[in-house]
Amino acid sequence: MAQPDLETFLGPLRLKNPVTVASGTYGYGTEYLDFYDPSRLGAVFLKGLTLTGREGNPPQRLVETPSGLLNAIGLQNVGIVRFIEEKLPALQGIDAVWVANICGSTLEEYTELASRLAGVDRIQAVELNISCPNVKRGGMAFGCAPESTAQITRAVRDAYPKPLIVKLSPNVTDITEMARAAEGAGADALAVVNTFLGMAIDIETRRPRLGNVTGGLSGPAIRPLALRMVWQCARAVKIPVVGQGGISDWRDAAEFLLAGAAAISIGTANFVDPAAPIHVLEGLRAWLEDQGCASVREVVGAVRLD
Image 1: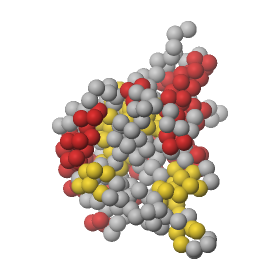
Image 2: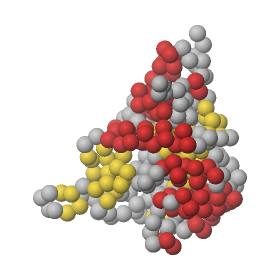
Image 3: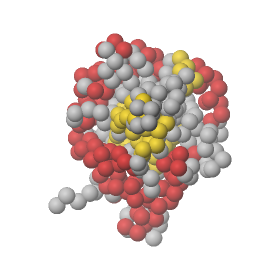
Image 4: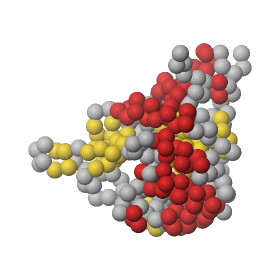
């Protein structure tokens, strides 16, 4: 039997396989070169970018929790100019699908970033991070209401002609409302989900263990929650979903595919095992063969509910 076809699509964006790596866990695309060639992956979601460079939050910025990781990095990055001038040239010759993640505090910052990236050939798509605080709306995240989700998606859609993936926050009452809003405003795909807001306290000092007090929880602890949200979003919209949240091995990835994800993204597991995405890819290929599937697309959304 021939090996299964692993090709999948995020709207017009073709991926050679469904295994991607999450923004914020893979740097600027070159940090894992000592372990494997990134072109083996379906796509690489690069570290979040802002208009100007950011130093990020004060330490402590990482705290381990049971089966999870709290982070409050604070969008530390070099900014769009240095990214284009210094980081992009290092990707020359690596035949991967590169997706830029954009972040901002105002609508204008997002559209400026999208406009600048539209002319960058090496970036094939943009991931829109709408978990950032909107400083013009009292600090509420752009993705916390359907209206603001639609507004920012539409604005970036108008500024960016290539594939647009909207990354949804789980810290909402009903994530399907945000999914429909992003779809209606022109998103080509959704990334579900970002980290869950959490906190840890040092009981000896009685102080928060994170310098920022709260942070984003990722890792296996959030996987059942993320899986449920992927399933809900995949049923609510017609555009593809990238499932992410606590995926550590190929079995986890298979669950997300069955729940309706067209592709999956690995985040925290990269810190535990730098080669985790390759192990997931190989495991998924073997599982599909064992299932007698000619294509990975046969299992997307194939969970049995009867």
